[in-house]
Length: 77
Image 1 (cartoon, rainbow, N blue to C red):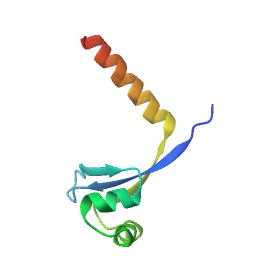
Image 2: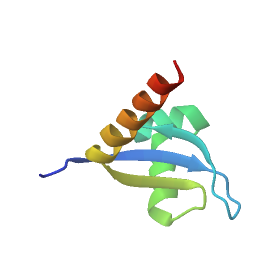
Image 3: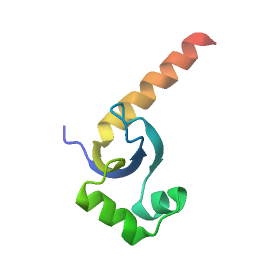
Image 4: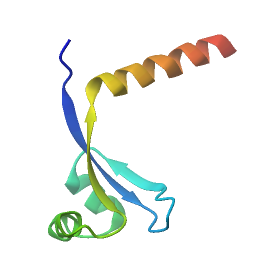
């Protein structure tokens, strides 16, 4: 079974925990959310500036986690 992947863009805290502050499907969307230009965001990502990440995720992971949440919420009802 082949799985598709996609990119997400994330702004995290700059401490050791790197907790998510904002997550977006596109760089432009994240740039707007955090108040920087798209060019600045991509510069941060390419230079490895702490707190800015471009992450590849597998579509199967997203669907599988969504299925788990749905099953868990069904059990509560």
